[in-house]
Amino acid sequence: MTKNSFGVEMKTKNGLKSADLDGDGHVTDEELERQRKILEIQDEDAMRDAQRKMAWFALFGMLLYPFSVVLAVWLNLGEAAKILGSMASVYFVSVAAIVAAFFGGNAYAKSKAASPAPKK
Image (cartoon, rainbow, N blue to C red; front, side, top):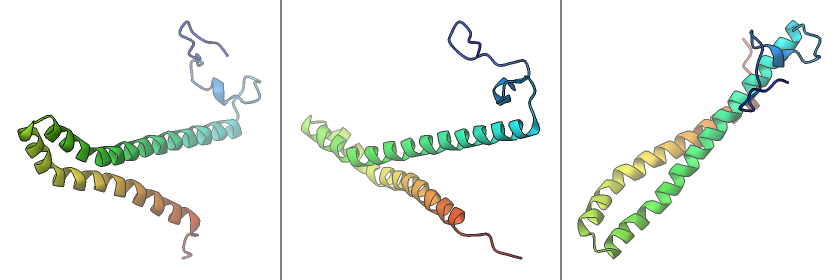
């Protein structure tokens, strides 16, 4: 595989070089379909990874938020502690909605994948 000066794999003019699995220079319909499926799986995996990271980041933020209030009080920043305390209700509801949407979406997707489609 040809790489450019940055170490990135260069693709052919039509972008199908990676789809030619047997290396004969011809891309068959089967090879093209397989490449499409591979890219689809990689995209879905990347999306799930991003959603998982977002949910964990939100969860850690939710767990660490009270410490920011305690830190503000400890540093004698009364106004900051008051502001952080007043924002808490909106913050916790918003973050809980993000985390719930992530886990709920995963559970729904798994239940759809596990159950067969209804017959008509």
